[in-house]
Length: 83
Image (tube, rainbow, N blue to C red):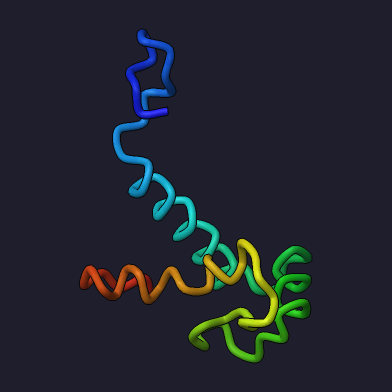
């Protein structure tokens, strides 16, 4: 995946950075678009009372949203605020 496109790869320089950026995007969309249908589904599924609650997802429900809910802490460790 990290090989240059001309060598058969996807041209992704740093997969971790790309992953963090995509997770941050979904975290931000959930936080900024609370009234959308998909946001309401995620909020109901994980029984989220407040979007800024850390972590947002229940630890008993594994999956992508648990990882996304922890993205704020990942960025805070790098002194980057998503608020």
